[in-house]
Length: 494
Image (cartoon, rainbow, N blue to C red; front, side):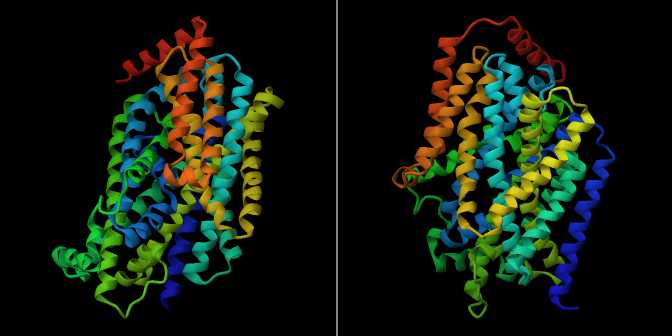
């Protein structure tokens, strides 16, 4: 058997396993709550790895190693910012969001939580936030499909469109069939694959480069700045990189995992698992790049055509073709885990927050589930149309969309959970100001090149929400009762 045959066998095995998990989840899905939120019954390990896999995407295995391979550890500031942001998200948002969404009319989406939490301007707030999710995530899903097409094109020489269709078909199948549970279970498997791959490559690779000491000496001979976090950094560059962590508070496909965990008492375990997974995976990605620098310096006859393929190249150099195929499957897993998470959240926004809230509030759960499955296909088709003409500007939208969600939803999520006096009017204006600021700042090159647009967007959204809420606040006994009930539920489940 040729190397390509072994690798394709590993990829096919992985794809079949994902579809089988979808069918397994289908048997555990009986109503809308199950389909959109897994019946709020996820364990800590599945919640943690599902959130991590949905978050990281192909950036963890390709983008970050590629950036560090070229520029060194100065590119690691984004990883540091993301780790801090993820820990704060688990610590500050997870317990209160899990409890509050339960006591506030069992909210199963972020827009429905805003609706139930504020009890004023609810329809427009729910519709606007649902539309933001629908629009941004359709392009987000599109960027993932582009990545899937490029993956098969670069790894196996397939036509870009064939690769795109393979990835789209498998992701649509298990997401449509099994809903949120299928997405969470497959994310758990995909997160485990990503973690093991990122640990194995640098651990085994360092033996090829002569051990730790010789590897470090070789990297220094290439460029001593590669091992420095500060040598080529600027103050605003570090701030912009760390500011990526602010985005976590407003990412619907990540924080929805907090709503789905079995109880608030499981969150501490989930946080420890999730942050440990994240730190080890990010360190593995950085070490993969550095070991790669040493290997290609020591072996000048071996060439690397694309720095972002350093993880794939090292896997193929080090391991048997079948194991290297599993490494490729880990890259595919990173792509697919994010697509599926965004698909189910977009489907939820379309059905729960737009159709159910505005068009038909009296349909049965079975009808809503069917519409949810139809929505998965519909959003995928639209995203596929955008992705059909391979366009790098779609991939560039990811950082822009991360800032958009972080600035429009992040301050609002925090204030809604921690400040009783946040009002629906304040929430609406803060969300709009955050989104508009990111859009304007991100499209002016002089500004976005100076400072990542999430920083001004988050700050202005926070200020506007607070000021407008102070002006429009009126005591509401129902809001006060729910706020207290959420705090009591957290205390009871400790």
